[in-house]
Length: 136
Image 1 (cartoon, rainbow, N blue to C red):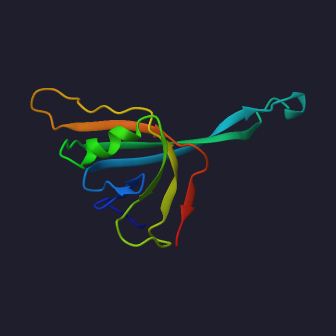
Image 2 (image 1 turned 180 degrees about the vertical axis):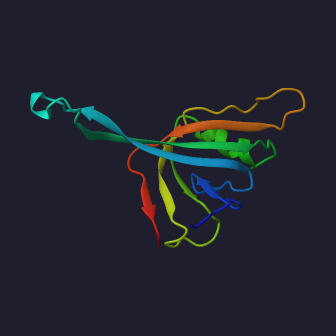
């Protein structure tokens, strides 16, 4: 059985590689479940897929220096921008597919934590439109 340990994920938002700040990137996609059960279903629930949606969950190490994470993300608040994520920073291939699309930057938590915590930013950004899987 193949196994993989994530050691070098790649993440870019709005064309900016953010791998150096990223502790976690998680893309989840789902399809609405639409109940189409009727009397001909003979007591069994029947469902069809409805609208698709997704979310890009991120955890970053914060950096307030000029042209670093906070300076890159703050101006994006309220905008829809492209993203790309893959399991490894290596070239896109059949064994290292990329997932890409657009996300809405619907929030930004520049300061969060308690005494002694690392300065991190954890957010989930909803996808806007289709999410594509590419191998080239």
